[in-house]
Image (cartoon, rainbow, N blue to C red; front, top):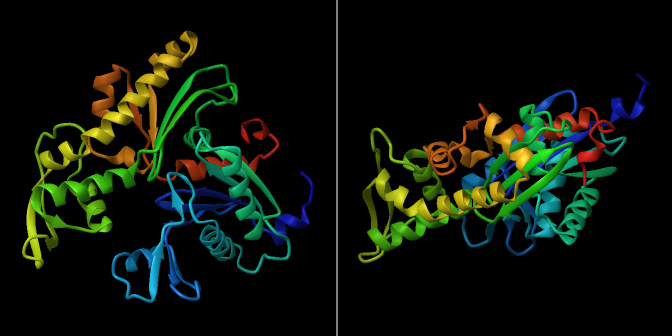
Length: 339
């Protein structure tokens, strides 16, 4: 093993640059950052005021001179400058005083990303302080993070449902045999809940409240014991604050279209899978990762619709970042899986 001065004075970094959360893996230290992909700016001067958790606390509560921005949309960069600032902030946070040599960075991107979007991500990372930038498809990173034998001639199917996209991929021999990237995820579900509350209860709520409802009582399949929760918002008729009790059956109905689209995408992917790999998936089942894998009953719904075993990983939020970390630890060994 060669002695590397760069390794001592620079931390190589793996980044899961998600629509909802950004996770940063530092070589030798594991995941050191797991914060929302949100930035608070001064409206006029566009100066950075807060990033991550601190900025999320401000969401929907800012005065006129402060604006909160989510620079990632549908898994890709929507605001180039703000993404660059956010990346620079996170890289500096984990590098501390090791800025003598700029880090090598592995960034996870949606499998359906275009060449233009790849270039945007690369440019953002380089301008934020990266020495070399490698891109890896999210489902591949998730599969590596989970510990699937991606380099073997065996079919593995991964469904990664994040904040902005649902990534479905069949992987074999270090490559993606077939993939689908649907712009449906946690954000779409939150927006559906906002619209449902407005339409059904004449109640205006913010996206943070919608996310809380989804986590507290959201489901994709009938529950053994249905839940309810009080929801606070503004009455659209009287224009005053109001509380409404909402049941899990209502939210399930509201989420049905988004969940149905994910189920349909999985079905299409299975139809496109070569028969030899399809038999592997029948034996091994489908792996679910990403934050929305935690939606109650989603595994049951998929199991019923596909008649295949569905496995949810213990910590589905972090496996993409862990996969980026494993690639960092052996860049030469994983060269085939990188864009």
